[in-house]
Image (cartoon, rainbow, N blue to C red):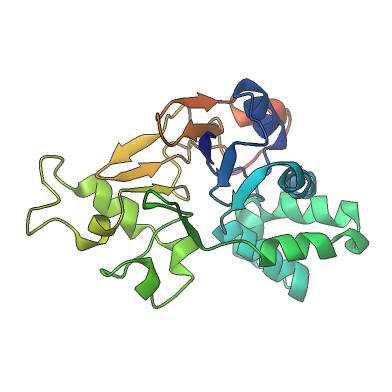
Length: 241
């Protein structure tokens, strides 16, 4: 069994299909999606529909992203958050209204059943954004931080690479897990980016919502594959700015 981690999709279904073909994914492989399945490109409904079907034939873990929560809230309440609409939500709104409300229930169940994080048998942690509690994820006070926090990646980038986990000044947050895989903070919004490692944190959000590719990475070997820049699949669409 191979274990793959997949960065933020942002409705880039065509890019995902290209990657699954490139990596020759089999039902025995474990696919861990890091969240943000919607918001940006025009195939929000189709993306979630595809993921629901994929989960029936493959071993998938779906992590909760902040954009997924924003979409779910709109679907339930009908309240149109201006910030959500301005950051990719408009395309998602149009996609879901076009599909028809009678098809929303199974998607709402999908959003409701997303996981805040996943910890594998090798003590590798997967979550959308981060956490702040020094004792680790089980002690986090506010679950929204799992899909909104940016301080974990900010701290990892700022850390002196020569600092050892045994050093007294090493951030305690990082010591609880062998590796941490996140998305949420795009490594580039304007062009090509590859997965980046800082401390024991791997960021695999390579800007699929903007001008970058979608990335899938083998968590054991760190080999990765990338789609064409996602915007090239959606000619004439703006995506996120």
